Image (cartoon, rainbow, N blue to C red; front, side, top):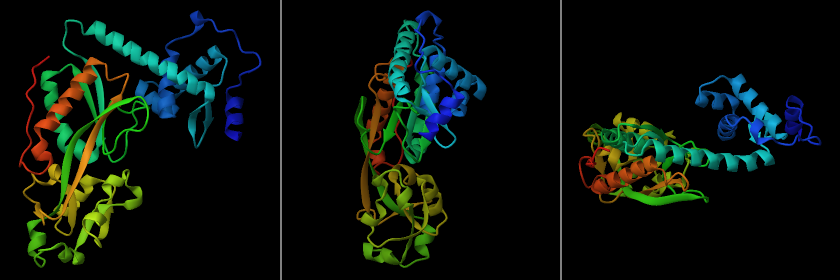
Length: 334
């Protein structure tokens, strides 16, 4: 309640004297500012995405609230800009408007021309850096007018907040209006450097691993339970070097002071790492490809979506650790 009062003191709107809305007087451009603030919950974050300063964002949001005669955000230092009930209702309409404009623009601008536009792909960190990055770099050979943002991060990306247009995740998407498909299975194995193995007694059975140290995830900070495979794969394993990052674990293993369970697509191509008990310590996981239902119809989204599925299919053996190198998909230039 206190946050709401403070917000109303800063943005005084007489709720008993709402003006009659004249659509002709509404500045439609203000809706872009509203949308970015709603997604980032910060005027500073919206300003960065829009390429303007903080005061411009605050002024445009205030102008929209004045025009509509209602408070769209409750603002606090700790919570940022939190949508009110009216703001939440408006968000659904404005979000749909944005998608409609994008679709209309694409249909008109790309008629008889090469596909163009912008696509943001969110992914888990290791898969994004070691698989998607090189694959999407090649995608632009065929679609040079489509700009790609790749977000390989050790946490979930939100499709609802438009942090990404397409997401590659370890789990099926949250409930909502999403389209998703299983992208691929992949395997993880136990890896070590040859120097590490030479400095220790031979490892012949899983019981021999009890005296070894492991690099692994921080249990209570792992963004998905699918990442907590060490204890199940190696019961009683001791980990005194932990990180939220798969890539950090990979580099820790390269130092030759610990073992690590790593994706085959990350570790197998690296001659500095060798699998340990390759037929006994095997973890299989899956990636899912998802997108908002309304965006899936956009041609540029379809192009990236179909390419990622084709790339994953072409690399089925590589992702499962049965092929030494990555395969490439041939696509015709647009």
